[in-house]
Image (cartoon, rainbow, N blue to C red; front, side, top):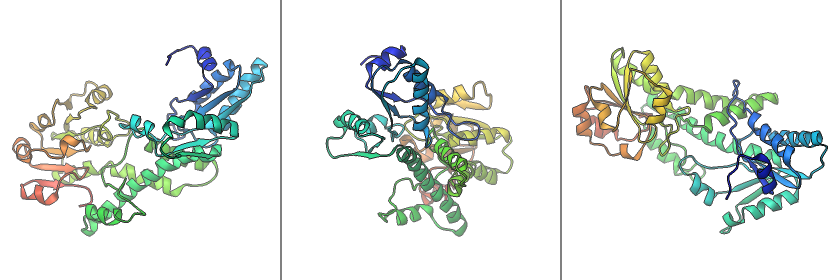
Length: 375
């Protein structure tokens, strides 16, 4: 394996060239393709023999056509005629489990226009495709849409469950019992139907918005996608709403936060529900004492030098002089805490559980004011 910053040597070396750069959201929510197209131009500037150029980045439908046009333009500028294919090969890696997902993929989606390109990709993935054939070959645009559709479907399940949790609270039902009841149906399943304080990260928010913007560009209003995003934005405000309802005025209160990253096993703070909560608390004049096993350094970078934020070295340290504890991220170490120690350390026995980690009856019997999602 070689690493290089020399584009020509890289293009000369590889028969298969992966484009795996960022596609950050533009101001309107659409994917910014400038980096993808810049790589395509570079490949066209240096390519001298047949290459398969693979879009690995998450890109809107139609991007392969733009990549092909960019390479063609660079070749024409050189006066060169070189055969190449553009392939869409979206990734389906979970943050925090990417290596395992890569080595043992559920599926390998290949969008290709020619048998030659499809055969090259099939040969490339042979070591990861031995147990049974996971390779799914389709046209370019279908492959591009498959990635967005997968993330949008998962985000929809989360928002739908959160919508049900709000109904459950109002009608006196327990959303966790509802979850078990519907999850037992094999057509629904248990994955991605856990109610909580909203989804975050680099994929679901960006991809739902990008797919909705793509739909707009083709003259179709994607009502469900827009609703998924609206429900998620509202869900991120619930933790603050529950605190405000309990205390009334939050001015001068100190709130302990357990978990800051958008999910466990990562330090990723992009679109994290904890950010919405902290910023609302600060606007209300409250102080925050927070702990996360991985994300504290990133939070310190984002919110540098805030006097109303204290980043602690342990979960229990956050409780000192705090008026309430809020669970934002379901880290394993938060699942079985010492509730007696929590009660003795907090100024008032209040827990707002954004991930439904604890049993309401247990906490209420222990003398806590306990608020969760949909229960």
